[in-house]
Image (cartoon, rainbow, N blue to C red; front, side):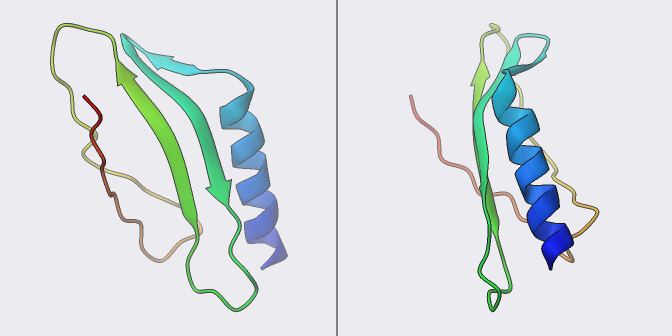
Length: 77
């Protein structure tokens, strides 16, 4: 359990230190909520900005420490 907390904290520190870029797509304000000791799930959040003229999609997410990863989207226009 402590390893998951440390990994989550490391990911938050890494992803929030600077925006990440992939072409014209930018990931900003990424953070993770550390789950309580009895919780079976945690959550990570981020803002993804597409600054190009072409549509793009996030089609998958993966984790080395979680049994299951889910993508949930919210679109702001």
